[in-house]
Length: 262
Image 1 (tube, rainbow, N blue to C red):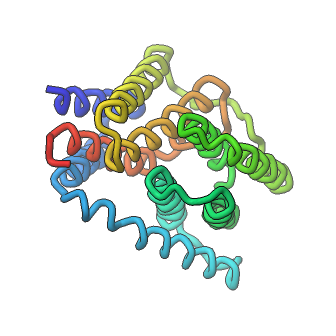
Image 2 (image 1 turned 135 degrees about the vertical axis):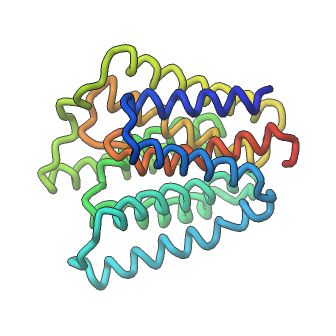
């Protein structure tokens, strides 16, 4: 029953964003729903094994941009960089709860990943995505009790804000156009409902497959709150395909956990 509820809330979340469906949008949503269902059927070890390939791809992208910073990047590749940067960091972050490494090692690893993701976003012109991501990360670390790391992440976020300013990119804009009040409430309501469900899953079971959707929907909810409430000039809501690409794996992971196969 909860699996059906998660699927319904996820579809409402997507519907609230797209509002009016064209044939292309309907196909994109169907592709996202199929991807979410497919992930819900993937074995746990296969999902966890994606950690290292994603981190390697993220570092490889950083090296490519370091040596070829002016390489031509199509829009699809830019969205792929944002997707990989988010999930590479998220997969490693979820694992620190089980590793119990010392403070220096945790800060060093998270700093390297954060700067790698930030550099990739900077080159692609999407560094502003790091603001909502960093705020979600700070909240997540606070919940985990990693209070000393929060100061480092807050400092990195300030550096990112300075770099955004240097790029002459406005942090606040006019907001999404054509988004009615009811759609705003639906976006905020469904995102925080999914966040609450994922948090309840942590309290009940814990583990990787519960922590990943919680951090993911924490980021999604933070992004929606900043874009809708504070009119952040860029975010997931400005990129429909990227928004769906981030949400679909999170919903699929939640449904898999609830399905009893974790």
